[in-house]
Length: 415
Image (tube, rainbow, N blue to C red):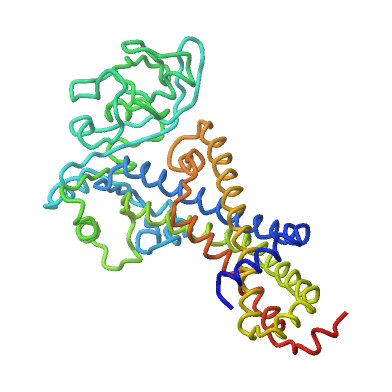
């Protein structure tokens, strides 16, 4: 029997048992649709995350007080493990650390920062936000925050601040350039507004004066920009070695500082996203298992209904492989139709979820996970079709085999 004839007979079996076939197909549609939606949303989230972290600068590293086990590990462990030293034992960063960092060959700029929450008042409205004091000499060179209007802080600035657009236009009712805001009872002139964010930046010396819990010489963090991002790992290790030498630390576990880079953060979050996607996809795949059982049940029923016809085909010369091929094609068609429906339903669901979440106003890296749209790739679509057909044919293999082994005499006598 020709393959074209087998396909034709298989299609007739599908169309002549519409209700039973469509009930089976719905199970495949739900399973494939759920997997497509989850994978598409995950892909969109990872792309959006890469764009967000890419904007933070792959050539930027941060040195903070206190040793975190995350700094020496990889993967999702970086995000889950806690610091291994108590806050009381953490030695604050000082000018000595900045001097050592500047001596490293691949280091381009080094900027110390202090930060603390403070009350910001404008036109009778008060909001508590983070105020960051920066060394203005190189801050405009190392920062990845872009200006919407105005300018960055300069060395000559004293009572001046740069603020984020969210603070200026959403938290307050429109703060314009050259207007004054009150921070902890002191007046500061707004000389620059960033394209996003809600923090406030001011000269570090002025921040030390008005912020209560900020020391006179210590830094809360030190930002480092390197010249060659491809040497990120080597430079990070050199930073660790030199700071340990400066502090007289011999053992890795005795470190009282942490060095992190945006590349580490990105790889950690990506790994966490992939694990989460795999977990959710595994849950969605349970419905595919249910659909596969439905296909098997439908095929067993079809074999019983077509027993007489199988006997007739065998009596006129059909071979076992011909009968098996017909039923395998029939189960594969059920999987294919379910796959087509699943791709359509899953794509629409992913776009609806991604589109509705993109209207939120979440900020930062975490917000980017929820603001991203869904991405349905051709690889995902083709993979869904192949997988759905495979599920159908595997589920129909046993019924097809049983049909092919029927003896013509027994099949003709079956009622």
